Image (cartoon, rainbow, N blue to C red; front, side, top):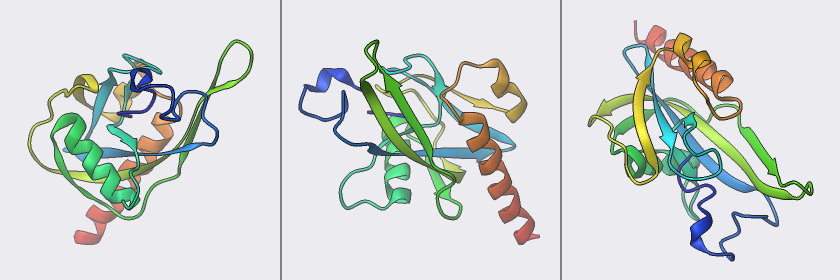
Length: 162
């Protein structure tokens, strides 16, 4: 998830020790039976594999935000398939039990359309992975369930086109 947790933005951006949950978006871009993953460049969870994404901006729909984040983070273009998937909630606490980060992420399923992905400033690396490869990777919480749902959604669309 791009942008989330960038602690160098200053104390007033609301990401660190937030007063309320922040709304995030992510996008599972599927191409030839594989999904696009990005290794996080920022804390929290630097180096962990996840979906491209970040915080929703005021005035954006969830799908618009997911597509914007995809393009900003890895330069890829995709087409969202249906409404958002089941949200994922990430709550990280400090040693004293205070909420350090709280995100509610609305993932989307999408089909790759153009432009090979490359790591941007918010991604250490990118890769295409088959679903069975995910278990061997360090990933963000709930990623495998989100990916199963995304592959199912894309498969349903493919079946409808036959």
